[in-house]
Amino acid sequence: MDGRYKKKALWGVVAWFLSPVLALVPSLIVVSIFHGGHNSGEIAGTIFLLAAAAAFYFTFFWGGSNLAKAKGYSNGILVLGIFGPLAQIIILLLLLFGMEDRCPDPSRRRPAKHHRDESPVARVIRLRRNAFAANLFGCLGILVVVATILLHIHVANTPDDNGVVRLLIFLPSYGLVIWGCANWIKAKNWPDAVCLIGLLPLVVFFIPYFRLIYRLMPKAFPIGMALMPIIMIAVIAVLPDKSGLPKRKHRNR
Image (cartoon, rainbow, N blue to C red):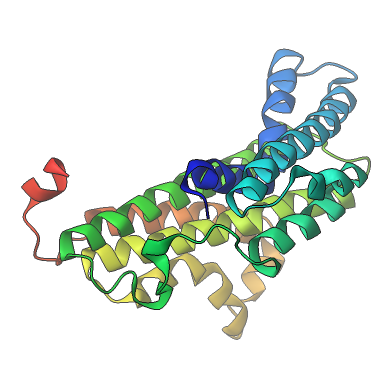
């Protein structure tokens, strides 16, 4: 890819996938201002739909334009994106994985080995950066879902649709936290099994009799799924660093 557009393209693609999360921000603001109002839920839902459409189109055409330029293609390939998110995701996936890169980076002709030559300090820094970015966006998505539940924000017309929208935001956010913690664990040189802490609420389903807890207390499962990523991050934060690198090197870099 052309280095002049690569970073903008990647940020644009990430922002496109996070468009539903970004669209919830103005809805939260409206509910916080008109909380308790008669039509606050309907107004917030309408604002969410408008903000989501604006976020999808803006991030698609901005990020897609940079991605097309980075791979050596014309912006005309983005025209079909006017038909909505479904057409947009197909175009983005084609640009990312299906179309040949006309502007290959000479320094990356051997992608399978591009991490093998990095120093231990560079590897730790890379893993920590990945962990920070993934945990930041993942926790943001989880907090947005929790806020919509606590503030009774209706992002769709029916309760079932509300649940689906929240689930579509929560699952990738939860996966981002797991991936971020996996990078953090590698940076600290601990076993990857530590990340299983984040899946403990699911283990209850496989334990006879204990699974009845979720029937008696239906809210225990969503509360556990929301709190467990925070607990996992806290546990990893207090684990000692076994990478063997002096702390000064982290600060200097």
